[in-house]
Image (cartoon, rainbow, N blue to C red):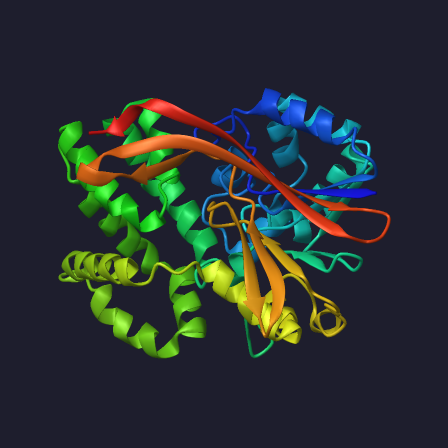
Length: 396
């Protein structure tokens, strides 16, 4: 018997404002229970440690991405362990192998040797990988940011272009987040980072400006910051390399006179399109991989070198596990008359969701899945969740 446990998007941070992981005791308890299974393996499907939104990254400012990757060292992990010692102790005591799949908030681990070596010394049972594939069961686990236009790496004429999402997060953390602190209570600040779907943040900013009677329109302030961010060299370079035609049109969007108004129009248009396109893009990506397993290697730009991508062989692919969009679920799919499964591990971060009548509700749904393989190779998927609903509405 083998037991493979899948979890994702813990976002265990350094204890500062962006860190809202507060399930240390629950994590400790679950890891202890899972460690008692027969032949256990733990697969963390990306964004286990929150590196991107730490003070160590904040202190480095808006350095170019690859320069930032090389600037960090083990102190970023030490600060996370100091804030969450039980998480580290639990992982180090886990009786089986820990497969740590790299996501987008912890990508620095993959390319920074100091950080990676520190983790390997801290956890003797850890295996740091860009993706996980188990040949016996045919289960593939990949974070999922590779199928998100803003958060994926791209390769243009042999050059690997880092995701714009990383730069957006750092720019807004440095420039916009400090403004929020001036107008909102501390307990509300993390809600801004946890709104799902993300585009509802615009509704949230409008509503919260009214509720707290702020002296500024926070939505317009956000759009203004976003436009300034898009004028930065790194953002313009990303646009030029990924969307050369749109890059030329963006001159109108970024002009000083009409920028905010055009930005607001763009935001409203995207929000309307969102209502039409509700299909899970990660599930769609999984179906494409099932239909053509060889296509998977193309999505690993920035994670593997070309030669290594050509060696990927997803023979007998039966199931795909992802995270990234913080939307947990398990679904059986019929692809070319064969049954496959798509599984998303959700997140350990709280979710702030827009309800009818403009109410925003905070809740926590921790989701996990266990693949049980018996001595005959038969596969059983067991899913479980821990739900915590906060009684108070965040905003009425």
